[in-house]
Length: 223
Image 1 (cartoon, rainbow, N blue to C red):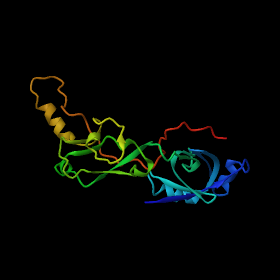
Image 2: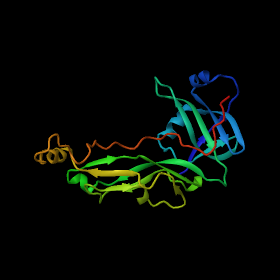
Image 3: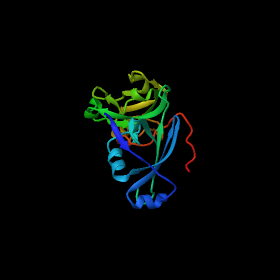
Image 4: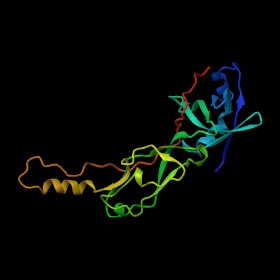
């Protein structure tokens, strides 16, 4: 899906605080051959952030030009949690970029139906490749995942990109419920202080929302 964001050039005045009072968010657009101080309508940015992930490609429209970008950094107000500054990065068209792609699970694990606990141990995977082929989301089908089974990074099948997260890293697993662990501890006769053979688990949590990605180049200082 194509996402577009209209931005405008800004000068030294009004200052960032005054811009926010008038419904605009200050920012910086930089990267391959460009470095601009920009501003974007707060309402447009909020709508965009509710639809994208940290690895989504965004087409920026500036003075009639269209540039492929992604979000490098977002600064939030610690009290209101509203966006107060935005950094957009425009990569070189012939060079790969490194991004964190969020993971989303699909289906209900067989092991969960059998009483197991589904654990998400990794909600993003780092990949490297051309910006136009990096996925917004990596979907993982967990339907056939039973108790004691897991899906690792090296189980993922992605075309056109290189996986940078180590292959042995576990993304999701189904483990035995805690009551079974307690039963194992009690069942060991003659051993004082017996402990469960499986580590305690916690309920699964959903993947994190959209957040800034990591470009190849060092961010220039804001002016």
